[in-house]
Length: 513
Image 1 (cartoon, rainbow, N blue to C red):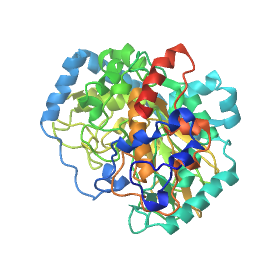
Image 2 (image 1 turned 180 degrees about the vertical axis):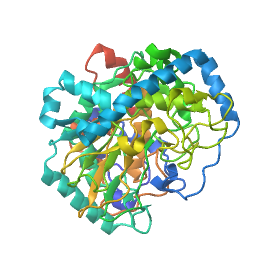
Image 3 (image 1 turned 120 degrees about the vertical axis):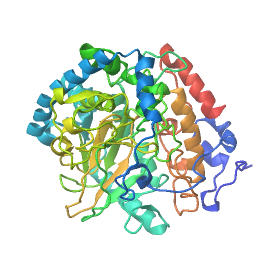
């Protein structure tokens, strides 16, 4: 006898436990009804990607940060045991190291970005490939997903959009869609090629944390995100240089700031040994102190997208700053220094010319400035706020991409979107990052799973009823592989060694009771 799940679902999305059992391990099947009691986010106010970027919002002046942020600077130094002389030594060393790296990027352009075939991913990255990925913070993975399969995803996606009352940015001519639960998105997120690539990239990370803060980098979990279908001629979806995952939280949150311990504390030798692939402190970092939609609350090691089109330079594609560790060090130190010629509190704009020489900059612990940081928004940068990065010259576009190719960039990598799509075909991608299994991520996966079942937006994103009434949206039945069901929270994880046994047990308890 069929037994209905105990929570209400839209009529077109109705499914039964017996249907689930055809795609879910029996060990999970008898506990799947626990999703009925899972708290879901995404039921509140709707919104779009524009809510987290000042460059996409109303073109109003950004208000100065409150005076309390001067105290935040001093608190960081006290908390981390930082002395002004070590901070200044690090700053001077970073400025000296920046110039040759800037010149290298200008000289090589997009060719500096590692380009690796999916076959090489399966064979294992070479040491030189690992070094290139770590240095740039970005990588292109070619092949893997067959072109015809990626193009079919786009065809299905366009049909889904045509059949339903979709929303997105900008509302009058949508380029970035507020869609999370379509079948093509599920097909891509649970594709073995993508999950295997994510495992390979997560293997570059490490952590010294022990249970319950341990992280299993061999087990990716699926983080639902949006998609983009950017049409030729578009100038609206213009994201300036930025870093996702919070802004002032990098300094304000006590756990987040410890990610930068070597940058802030160690003087010259410290910042040079900073390891952006150490997740020990990141796992508990709070990236969203202001409860803002669009802010990632999990440990997401790599951001990424999978292409559904052939896209080249000037086709409205991604731009990156391929300088991971050095750029991160500069960004973290930047709020503590200002040009000597600029008064404390005076904002830097493109109209203000400042010297880049180290001797023309001084320590600034009294001002509340955290350049490019707006509470509740992403960390933004431009040539005036972070002049030594010379972003107008060092932000490079991703070279030629074909359908099925993947692009990933480290969560600290500065990235942007080209200001205009000057190509002749759409520039279409599914945003699919790489996130590892940990207790924090398992808790998020539980809520995300419930939202997916109900057709609601993923928990970190703007709410509203989302796709709950949409025709032909995805259901758990569309997840057909064991690896895919595990990544989306519909089948228990399996411990592969003693090191991850306790974590896997706790994650399964969170997901299935």
